[in-house]
Length: 398
Picture 1: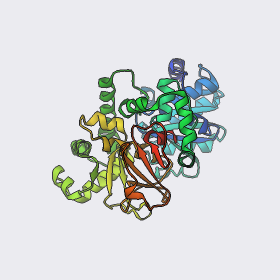
Picture 2 (picture 1 turned 180 degrees about the vertical axis):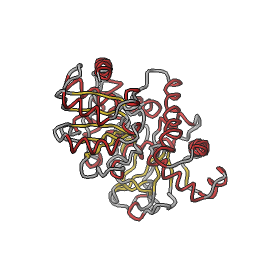
Picture 3 (picture 1 turned 135 degrees about the vertical axis):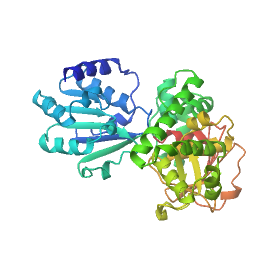
């Protein structure tokens, strides 16, 4: 355990504290069991280390941070660690990448029963099935999902421009005031164009080539490691999944033809639908349906988008601007909102009531003229004109 405590100090002393994600204030860290889920690369580890440094300081004592694929756990169990940590007066155990420890769910459940005063915060893949794990944790764990950077957070992280979160209702009903506030601090359009290329993951260091390589590594890790582990994907078929990602990135916006996709990949249609569902849960893609309430397990989606615009640029060098715009809207509004395909009118229906049409600055209201609660999100705008709003404004919603 002394080795883990030494590593704890190294990890915590090196974490940067200049900018801290807003989700830190949303998490009830004092609860006994807290889970932070999210895709690889979005900053779960950094968030936990920042919280430890801010709350407990650098040295291990009341808190202990452990990475669960540490060689320590090849000869020690999590249960043994918790027992010793509790005996030494430990209060808060932080377990990073818990899915890399095979019996995590059973042991965390037992630890919570043996030591009810010991808090455990753990992070894991977006595919982590906390509520359906081997041990019944559904009534015990408080789960949170961590996304990549929103446009608002990108402005904070990379440009030093701090803005509050606006609800979607505030954005739509008071767009003039929101845009006045943003434009008083910066010229948002140029920064928005940068965000579309390099703003979603918090590891951009100035080199687009290296940044896109890291995104490709994230995609490969999810497909090669996490999907076989969590989705039962045969490792022999991971090349098919990669081929599917490349096909989708090069053919978006993709109004789904499952037969064509199955023929391209040389697999049957049910397998294609199963793979798409797994890729959606893994945050590689976003599946959009015309009616979310009636979606069945093997139903064909109406539209498919790569999960975020940065991943889209990393996987395809030739992207239509219309694809990028719609991909942005889906990635910014999917967290916290129901996003449906606007089959009858508009591009998207949000929360079953708001209709959004997405386009360039010349986009007209012709297609949504008679639809209540309808808006245009238009590129290359800094201020709204009536219900025609700047596209970037929905990037302030989280």
